[in-house]
Image 1 (cartoon, one colour):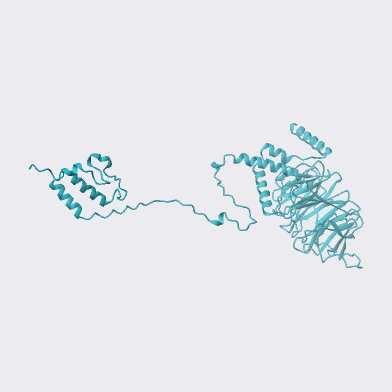
Image 2: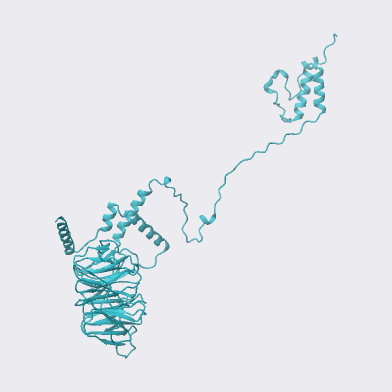
Length: 501
């Protein structure tokens, strides 16, 4: 009993290196200064428990726990729990942003959501305004002048198979064949004595017909005669009266003439197969319908436009106007519509099914309208007037979208729209044929894909903002000759006065 406890010497001896005593507190319970031992390894925990049992009085339960702890192996470490995660990745298709060749432009990704582009409308308006101004800057419609006639150009004819071939006839009976690509005359022939009143190319393009004041109808070869051969017609028909107009059927070997009456001729006969009269002194023009090829229309001296069916023996219908019509032209895309050029300075578009009133009245000329011709698309037509101007009208608009004039150009007698819808040809009193662009600001020649895209984009912008006042004012502005400007103002005052009455 009086012996000292077994652990007494240990109290006065220093604890082993790297271990902590119990009085160091719970703050250092799991942290050890010995670098050789891992802070959380099972071996370090066992040594700490053994030293603690040496420093403190041992109880039976503590001894049993120590024996159990030292004899049993440590449990294996618990495997970490699996965690599922969603990861969003970018997936791109190289076809959307990689160029096919190094000549292509770089593709720029864009988001077209309107909420991301609040200034889109203002930017487009500015671009439309600039495009409209540039259109007026580059509006230079005149291309070339074909001179060579010795008298005023009275009529012209387009070749139905060749875009570059044009035929023209003058008041002295001379006919010329032109090559429009070279701007030169390739053939000249003396067709009639006096005026050549009408000229048309056969539907196959191998020959053409002319009529004149000498009461003859002549058929000519389209191909020029060989060297040393004389220029002679293929066929000549002598009529009883003067012929004032001529047109050919679109599919058959049949043509029509007008004068004292409207006659239908077969190319193989020297007399007409059918004649139409309706109590009229004379006719000035005749035209076949290009769609309904059996129909034709003529302008009469009694201020009427008469419609015929070639298969019938009598005329179909007649519409009488306030003043005389000089010529008539059918719409090549809408079979029932035709436009007449009138002496009252206007053009009238009619539907042949409802002749009680015109569909549209086209105004802007300040003198008699002498000729009219439709574009191949049927959406526009061009008119020639005695006021020395050429005007282009949309088919359903009352006013022209374009006016062409020059200082030297006199009364425009005949007009044609080319078959490729890009050019206009006019013949006038001062013996010249002029070549114009159908779209004044159009760039000629081959366009690159980027130029085509930019042109199309600008056109769509102009159509979108065409009714805005500033753009509308710039697009409609045209410089006119002084006399035409004052005559236009005078006509406007007269119309307002009649309206007030």
